[in-house]
Length: 107
Image 1 (cartoon, rainbow, N blue to C red):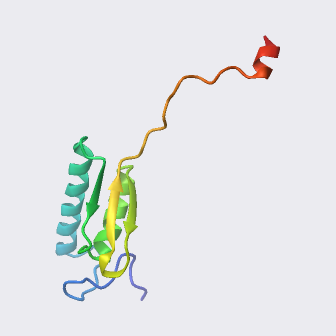
Image 2 (image 1 turned 45 degrees about the horizontal axis):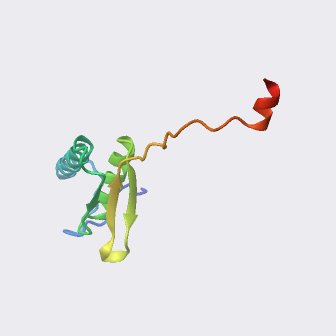
């Protein structure tokens, strides 16, 4: 059988993580709480998660960040790989553009 999405070695114990066991559910809830805390704290523009996260934890955080409408990216390589999340930057709303020559001729 094919391994399920998200299954992979865990840095701590070398066990495959599929997200179905009790420990994975507990860990997912803890990661979700961190995303929720970031979203609730308007004083934070971004958060960098440590490189000690497992690939499974990074994957879960990517999913949770996407669901929350956050920008998310992995940064670094190998053991230095970390995850950065940030708020979406709203499009700048400036003054309206001046009328074009076509607009002036139509009037």
